[in-house]
Length: 189
Ligand code: SF4
Image 1 (cartoon, rainbow, N blue to C red):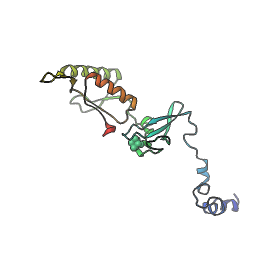
Image 2 (cartoon, protein in one colour):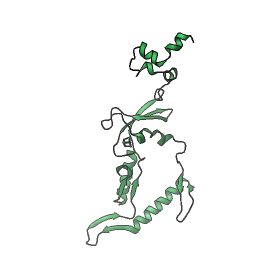
Image 3 (spheres, protein in one colour):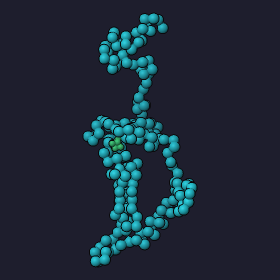
């Protein structure tokens, strides 16, 4: 590289001599930053979604490549958040891609001190048995004055903030159909 090219490579020289006197554009770019490309550039498609973490419901653009989520950004078209995400929402990419994400069913027996892995079928059978038994045991058809209740207070649902809209919709339907009245989600807290 010649001396002239070397000097012209200095950001301050580019700022004074070029068309970027405030140094907020081309003058501030290094060779390396000029080579950088957005993670979203090679995405196959973008899907609009809603951040699941809290009740604000910020709009998200989810970029997918090879059927894998490669980036999640704020959706400028959302009237709620207008392209912004808080740090939690901006990190929701890791919700689906983090390598230490828990994917097996973990179970700690009553009085147990260690967690153990269960296969999904076994866990589903255990849950179904307990729901049916609890519902039978705690069902209230009427109150002491004969007024119709048709409910159980034997179990409740507290959903996590990583459940999406569709999952929450199905959970509300299921628990209401079972007669539960205490149905809540952490995102409303
Ligand atoms: S967690 Fe943050 S990004 Fe997500 S909905 Fe709430 S405020 Fe918006």
